[in-house]
Image 1: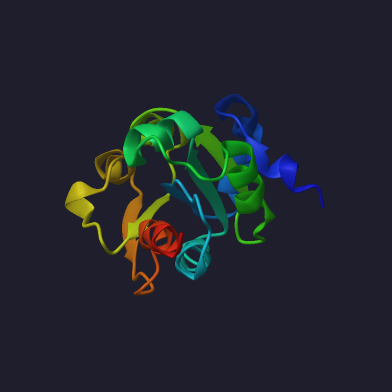
Image 2 (image 1 turned 135 degrees about the vertical axis):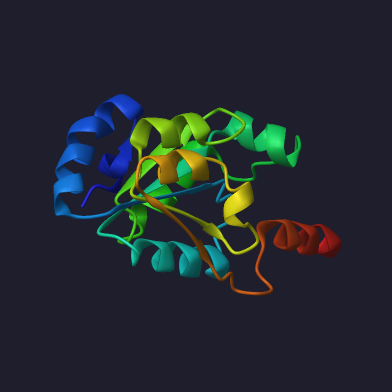
Length: 159
């Protein structure tokens, strides 16, 4: 399988999205996924189990830098997208450059929007859009002790 075929734009995903909707619930989540670790794998796998297809919104390099600072991302957007696309439980990856995935969520209208349990439905971007469209918003328990920021800090201490 050529995993790069799982990397879409908003325009190229439309025909596929309509086909997936006929199969069942489409799940959406998003993130930077700069250094992929066990916490990410567990979270993504559990998210996919909530529906039949899963789309991951991935922050562009510029977006990650604006959110996390000039030293990030450590891994460029193409490489991050390919890694996400390589997971069998990820059906599509779409890059977004905005500060939040609201525009992408509004465009995709996923059946289920997922974030980690460090969020509540009240502060999940796009929750109102998904709920208004008849969808659901879910949180997934995060694996404790795993975060990219803590890994970056640990690596810095070792240098």
